[in-house]
Amino acid sequence: MIQSMTGYAAAAAESPRGTLTLELRSVNSRYLDIQFRLAEELRLVEPVLRELIAARVARGKIDCRAFFSAGATAAAAQSLNPAALHNLKRLSEEARRAFPDAGPLRVADVLRWPGVLAEASLDDEALRTGVAELARSALQELCGARAREGAKLAAIVAARAADMRRRLADLAPLVPEAMAAYQQKLAQRLREALGTGDDDRIRAELALFGVKTDVDEELTRLATHLDEVERVLAKGGAAGKRLDFLAQELNREANTLASKAATQKISDAALELKLLIEQIREQVQNIE
Image: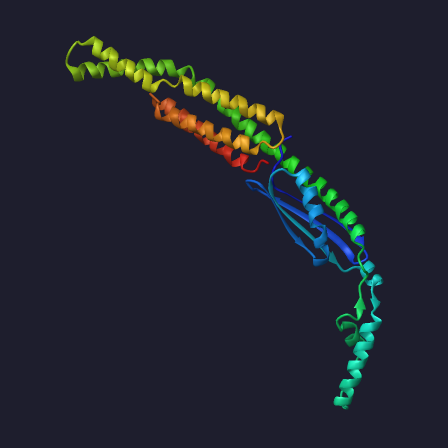
């Protein structure tokens, strides 16, 4: 199955610290490039996430973000820190002795003091297990999105390859006729230029022209490369680099065809092929 390199997925679950959310964003890249943006308390799960992502994704720039957001679960799990309260009380009494006119601390002031509200501790093994489950769920969604877009990209590439085949089929019968007509015209010009009846010289010049303008090899290679494009699309998997290479080879043959074109029709056909090849290359850049 052909996969795109672009996609998005997210998964979330409740935890003692609140809602744990994991997001995956994927864009084009020449290689597999995984970037992490994790809450500080989640740094320990980075190796697990990297291993899971690398097992499912072969190519693309992956942005993995994981964070906690406050919720009812987190609020219920909070408690007062007795040591912090005792320390705050001591500091408040010292401040009141230094500033007798100062007002007493309000409850809201106490709760905002750093360390007064103790958050639920995190069990490392439970955290790894929970994040791994979220990652598997998000990866399943991401790969599904990449596969759906990949199928569309493969269909576009296959359609452009089919258009190229039709143009090659239309072009093949024109080549011998165009070559014969052009050689006849060239022979007449040579006779006029040479001003002699040296048919051997004329035949030699025409033979040299034929070698330089013969496009059978280019047409054969174009057809062979299209066969390989169709085979790679049918096989699926990580095909982006292979398809990109084939697009470059197709473009090279089309350039040679255009440079050796003996008539305007052949030249126009070569330009049409180059346009289709460029459209293929644009789509291939998005394939894993």
